[in-house]
Length: 212
Image (cartoon, rainbow, N blue to C red):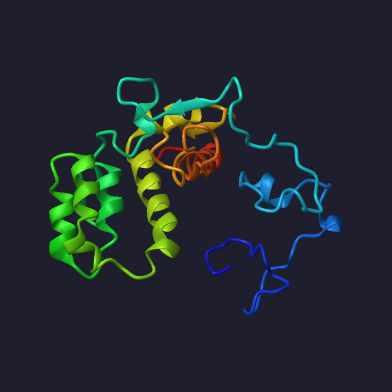
C-alpha cells in the first residue's frame, strides 16, 4: 500500500490499511485492477467482471520471442541494449539482473557487469565459487529486480517502448524449453513470467502521457 498499490490479501494481511478496499457499490462491476491496466491475480474468484481475455498459451496471435535471429528478440534480456541504473551502465538487462544476486559483493557484481556477453554474465553468476555468496532472499526479490531492469530498458529506449506498445493486446511469450520460470518451457507448461511482466509493463506505459 505504501507503494501506491492495493493489497490483494487485505482480509488476512497483518498490516494496517489506509486505502478503502474497492467494492461493487463503488464500481460499475468491472475489476478495479483491470481498469488500472494491471492483471487481476485472483481472476477465477474475483467478485468483479473482467473484460480482458485471459492470457493463454498457444494462441494464433501470440508473439514468441527468444531466438536472436527472429522477430522481437529485442524483448529478450540478452538483446544488446545497455541500461543505466543508479549511475552504472550495464551492457544488457541480463547483466544487471545477474549482478543483483550479489548486492554485498561489489567485486562479483563488477565481474558480472564486465562480462563480454549476457550468456557469460549468466554463467559467471552461477559459478560455485560465487553462489555461496548469493543473497539468501533472492527468490523473493528476483521479480522486483527484473521489473526494475525492464522499466529502465523500455523507458531509456523510445524505439523499444514503441515496439512494445505496438503489440497491442497480444500475448507475449518467451518461448524456450530452457526456462520454465521466465519462459514457457517450450510447451506452455512454464510460467512465462518475463512475458507476463512485459505485458504488465505494456499496460502501464500505454496509460502514460507525454514524453518519456
